[in-house]
Amino acid sequence: MAKRDYYDVLGIKRGAGDSDIKSAFRRLAKEHHPDRNPGDASAEQKFKEINEAYEVLKDEQKRAAYDQFGHAAFEGGGRGPGGFGPDFSSSMSDIFDDLFGEFMGGRRGGRQRSARERGADLRYNMEITLAEAFVGKQAQIRVPTSVTCETCSGSGARAGSRPTTCQTCGGAGKVRASQGFFTIERTCPACQGRGETIDDPCPACHGHGRVTKERTLAVSIPPGVEDGTRIRLAGEGEAGQRGGPTGDLYIFLSIKPHEFFQRDGADIFCRVPIAMTTAALGGNVDVPTVEGNRVRMPVPSGTENGKQFRLKGKGMPVLRSKVHGDMYIQVEVETPKNLSRKQRELLEEFERESNKETNPASSGFFARVKEFFDPGKGG
Image 1 (spheres, rainbow, N blue to C red):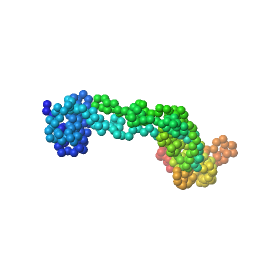
Image 2: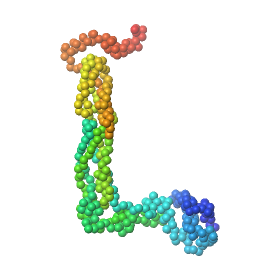
Image 3: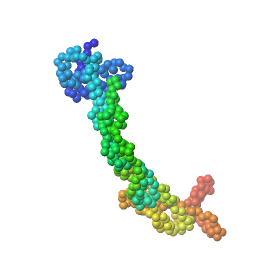
Image 4: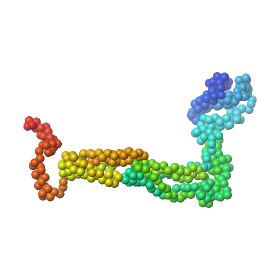
């Protein structure tokens, strides 16, 4: 069977540039790759044909010979069946690096994995009170973490020696193995991808370059922090391996529930019980605030249960701002209990003297109920 013209195989014109040739090859190779067409013999044959055409046209000298003599330029040249020549392995390695580099673990010429790895970030959970969140806090915490070994300065090697280039991967941190058409790249098992090995490890850290130690750190908590606030202490996490950069420490704050106050952003809510007489006659009540003192709040006569009062600027500070939220007081009118005889007599007298004007809501409600169930006797 006569071979197809290489330009026709790639679907390009004879004057196509290198970028056009490469682009056409990439598109067709992906479309007809055997892994994408399992069990399809025709796709496999097309893939071989595409590779053969690309191998010739991508090379300036081979392309010139092909343009002058056609397929006859390569007859008897020792090429194997199906267009696979002796340099096929090298060609395919470049092809797969270009097409599937990320899948295979990175392209050729990429940087080796650094032996100096960044340390891990750490998390520390801290609970504070609402009052501490109001004024801010200077705290000290003790954190067990990995720090750089002072004996070997983080190198992991005994004093007077140093890590050596890994003999297995040559310092690349990765090794390659050919399997059929594929070149598989994986982390070097000898050095775990660091590119270096330690022949004489440091006795203090056993070659890790780090030791575990408890450190005391000062933490500044600004006023106005909310539940779930995260504070980052740069460079206070775990030490990096083999002298790598240190990770960070993240402090997650939780605010302990308060006995009296509920918080919503910068606003504070508080329920305050008041006597029935205060609600009826009016008066003043002393209410607590988050900052720890009391504020006298006037209660007008006739205040109903559930009435909410606003104390401007008595809430929480807004983080990194001079602005404060507000405080909302919701009064709960208390019903008298355990009455003495005199108190009961006074309330009974009060009830006899009550009228529609004294209890407008209840009087109006029962009047409407009566009219609803007995409309003929209403009014």
